[in-house]
Image 1: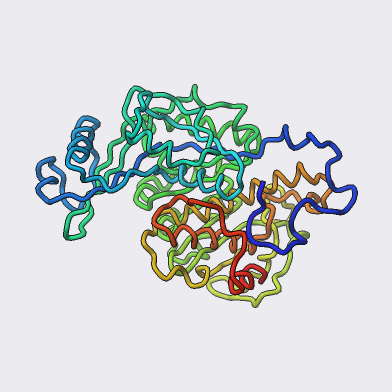
Image 2: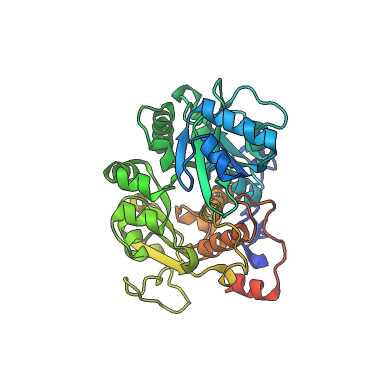
Length: 432
């Protein structure tokens, strides 16, 4: 596994001190270091159309609407025939994160979900597979007779965007296709709030089953909230669900407001820590916040300047590695904040996926923790049963850097790992 973030050589592996590395050369080959994610598999289709096209297919301009499978197929064929499609891309929040995790860590990840049984060369289901890293294991997907889910974005000459969503088979995943042994050995289970939208959908009960397995096996459950409207409409449900199952919550400021009722990001993170053990809160141009727990005896004070906002000296223990609250004798809530890397890219073409990129970095760090425990079992790091390999401060740097890379391109999926070498300004940033 690649280790997360840019670091000085002393932090890299293998370490040279005697007695810290495993004596068994085959030890690592049998150890799993993968991430599992459940997703509503979706293809994003972008196209340029005239207003008459929207009228012909009864699409309301400037709005987002649900299309049944028959209408979506008719629209898609019309777009194809007229050459109006600009691009077809693999989508889905969890799918984006699994892909980015595998790119960053150079490790396997496992996707669970439903995909259409009939895939032909060049169709949108084929495009989903083609645009997904080969290290994302799709062999556990459930085949469905229904078409694949599609999210169509219609751009008219005036720049107005109209959306049409076809569910297809995106909710068809049944509990029988949740592999218990795969989840039990994973470094983390990744889910999204979208999976829990409708209790009658098969994917709802499948997600709950997966979370039950993870909870029993003590596998961290990481949940991305996805949309403030959904969280606001089922606020009590999601708070109870997070409190019961979720280890880490990832959200933006609007989703945090919907979940907690608090508009201040630090206070929202503080409130969410009453439900979960770790919080990622992205605030757009204001960077991101991380919150977690550490046992008082393992708390490490920052060497950076102390900052006070709605919480006095909130970053005091940001050099600590976050832990599960239940593992702490005297739990302390810890926080860190970081502004956008180098102020953000000069040109931002698309903000879609920046939060997913940050979450992929955190998941990489959680996976690196499990890898390190197996690789160097006698390491002093293992004296603390932490969730992550890195400190809260270091994780924020890494997550911030990955977000920058996503924002600098026109796709939520990384095309490559982070550069091996950075310019002097970037190196100074990482070494800080």
